[in-house]
Amino acid sequence: MWQRIGRLFQQWRKILIICPTVAFLIILGDCKGSFQLLEWATLDQFFRLRPLEAPDSRLAIVSIDQSDINHLDTWPIPDGILADLIEKINQQNPRAIGLLMYRDIPIEPGHDRLIDIYQKTPNLMGIEKAIGETIPPPPLLAEKGQVGISDLVLDADGKLRRSLMSIQLDSGAIKENIAVKLALKYLENEQIVMTPIPGESGAVQLGKSVLTPLKEDNGYYVGNDVGGYQILLNYRGLIDRFKVVSMTDVLENKSELEKQQIFRDRIVLIGATSFRFGEMFSTPYDHYLLGKEQRVPGIVIQANLTSQIISAALDGRPMIRVWSKQQKWLWIILWSFIGAIATLKLLAISPIPRKIPRGEILPILLGIGSLFGISYSAFLWGWWLPVISPLTGFISAAIGLIASQHYQLSHLASVDSLTQLANRGYFDRCLNSFSDSGGKKTHLSLILCDVDCFKLFNDTYGHQAGDDCLRQVAKAISHAVRHTDIVARYGGEEFVVILPDTNAETAAQVAERIRLQVRNLEIPHAHNKAFQYVTLSCGVASTLINPDFSPAALINTADQALYQAKEQGRDRVLYAIS
Image (tube, rainbow, N blue to C red; front, side):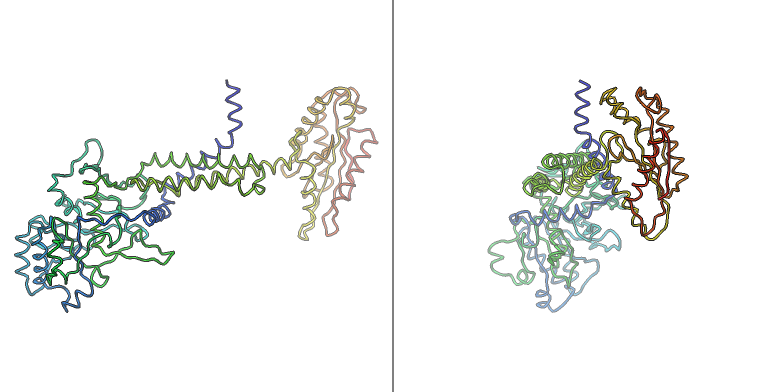
């Protein structure tokens, strides 16, 4: 059993090392908010791709734009005209009216009449600004509790993706958003109220839906202010998703408005829709790269939030929900493994990445497409799943596996399989590299080592013992040289050592240390003509690198020295200067 587990570990060793490492680094970056901007941009794209929803028939917007102001020939709108507007709307018995205009000071003529309208319109809600530079509400509406806050929360890139449902002031008072006030007023007729869910922090039941506050620790808004009770905006769309009537048409008693009872049983929002008279906001529907900037008036933002709350409560339209931190981490880990496994399939087809056939890259493309497809499908059901962080894990794990494979192939191409030293090809490349010294004159030495009477050793003890002998000799040479020296198997029973910045005398000392290290192994060799154990003969050559430096000449000099060492009885070091 343990052997089987060991084999499985060896088979999956790279993946089991690379994937957790990649996932850990990405999770660390995610906890620092490194992927937030790209995750937000992906969410925006999902909004733009999502099919248009039907307009919400439960809301109507009374717009105030340039043509209305031109018709009145005055701005701001006097209280008397605003009173007429509210009265005409209320005659059709809407469920709630939201006056999304700051009216904290009288604007004559007609202020007394507007006060009278405030007094006798219990379904009218006004607004105030409670954060930053505050703007008070209409005093009478405030006394009656018919006021909501209009404050909006922008993300770091200036876009509106979340909404402030309520806040608690320093005084302890809780202020609700105007959209929440209007939605709850509408839902009173359906006998639907917000009910806290025991055991779930901040979660409330509202009809068919559950509202859960956005929290910083889920990783979607690291380092951002998520104070108060915030939720993600599930936009229905732009202003065309709502019934829009101009203020002028209402004031002039257009017959079709009366006939259709356009405001009956609806929520009616009154406010500016022109950038000249109200603030405009950037939303997910803006696309700067494509030059599509569709800034939205604040009244449309509030209409979307009002519609979102009502639709969730009555129709079960999904709120946008997010995963916990731990769920995100598991998602990242999963896609890191998927990326590595898909890449493993490619490498099984072609171990050399650059030779992978085009058609065989399909698993990678399929994996990336699946990630986007799953995330987009989840979005349609009201879930915002991470895309960029798992995609980074997928790609990083794939790159890590390919890099590991490339390193392994490079290693195999440069290493002798028997001794695990550098092979002849690596030695040649390394020695030739000294030809380009940049004009700097420096010493270079070479040691050629040969196992004495190795053919007789093989004939006597067998090739398996011969292989083991070469491995021990290679290890002994590696222990004897300095960390700057390069050891390679030159061929058969021959080894070579490159000694940069080393003169002949020092190289001879290293060679002598190598000779003694091998002799001290005391590997029996009955037919060795020099000694009873395995020994080495070493030829040392040294040169001063200059423009005329020839690697072949240096090797030839070392080879001649090695030949003389053997001629003189083996188990010795001879050196020559090239």
